[in-house]
Length: 262
Image (cartoon, rainbow, N blue to C red; front, top):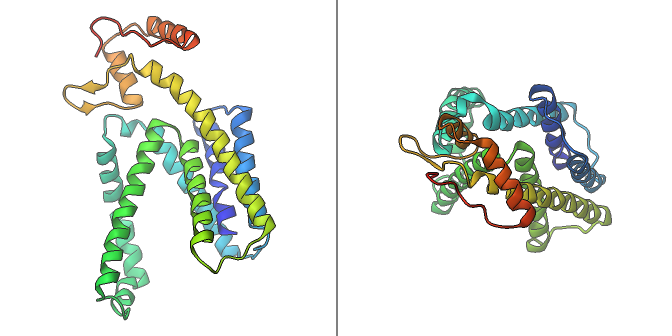
């Protein structure tokens, strides 16, 4: 049931984007999101446990996750920051809250009392887990800044479906359920549908961004919104660029960069 409730992060993202950013979503996006959430609900139909505290915690986490992704994509404060720099500031701001939570929970003491704490295999696993966590966080930032918050949530959902399938094959305690399989299939189809739609949109955007400056002499590589800002600072002719991109997209021809562009 937890997985089904976490799928509602997509709904939270759509609601917040509409209310905060006045963004409109097409029917294909709504349909793909509905299919993913419906699949998660069907898969969780055999585990309808209820916990008010748990449900409230997951719903709050969904809204905070959606708001977090929207701010990474659209906050003016992130303009000019590299992904690594943004990740560093995020970690620095989170450190006081994490420290307070550790102090209140007394978790460090319980970890030190764990019988296998000094076992080398446990320590190596812990280090690798931290490295993977950093990799996931960095990938989340990159995906959100290049694409959009819904695409990041969709990628996470598809990852969870693949993990479930791999776990079912790799471990012997999996109990086959028809509804579980149907739900996983629905979620995967919805995620692939939206990913294919986003890929087509990204192809058109890449053709447009091929005309934009890709590197700033002072700040280094530029991505996403920063490239558009650099274009405005250089006073390049956006109208002629867009016309060239549209024509190339229709004829499926490579875009020719204007003289003097980077």
